[in-house]
Image 1: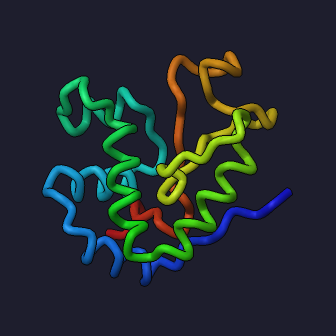
Image 2: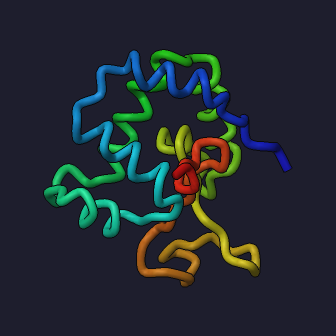
Length: 132
């Protein structure tokens, strides 16, 4: 199995600083990095977002803004994402998180019949929920 490109945390933090994220976008990144596991509904409820645009679309926009400041890594993540997609397409949100899997090795998605909503997990190197 092709390993996910690990995100260099220091470079990621520098890219966030350069990405000119709005306060709401910054809040989304911080929340994801703090809670670790989320779905569209929990993200929208926690941040009190409107239903449109969808929270996951906003996440992809954020990732593209960050990715502009670490282009080689972002492109590597996109290639990895495409290889591991069941549909052969990349998802820009994979810069920060990936689809969660259960203990039986099944994706936590409605299509897999395992959850009502696609469930995502922040990449371990970006997780900050234990920093007190």
